[in-house]
Length: 129
Image (cartoon, rainbow, N blue to C red; front, side, top):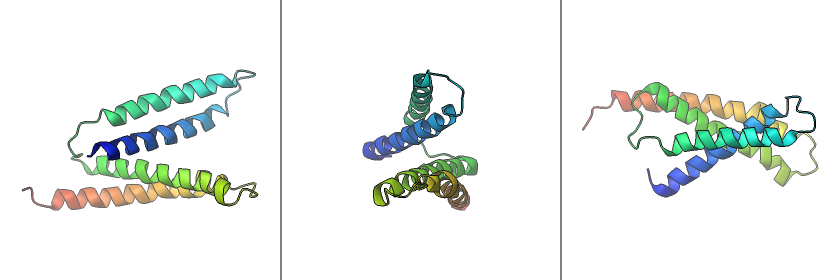
C-alpha cells in the first residue's frame, strides 16, 4: 500500500469513527459537560486510526478480513457523503444529514461487506504465484 493511500485510509477511518462516536456520546446525559463527549470521541478515533495505521503490510488472508475492510471503507465513504453532501449541495434541507445516518452509511456497509467477501473469495480461489 502506498503511503498516500495509507494516509487517506487512516484519515477516513479516523473521521468516520470520530463522527459516529460523537453521535453516540450525544445520547449520554452529560449535563453541561459536552466536552467529555468530544474527548471520548477523539480518544476512540485516535485508537482506531492508530490500529489501522499500524496494520501489517501484508494483505489480509481471510474472507472475513476483506469483508470487514470493504464494509468499513464503503460505510465511511457512504456515511460521509450522505451526511455532508446535503449540507453542501442543499443547505436548506433540514433533514439532509439523516441521509448519511440512515441510508447511505448502512448501505455502504452492506455493499462493502458483500464486495469485500466476493473479492476475498476470488483472491482465495486464485492460485498463488
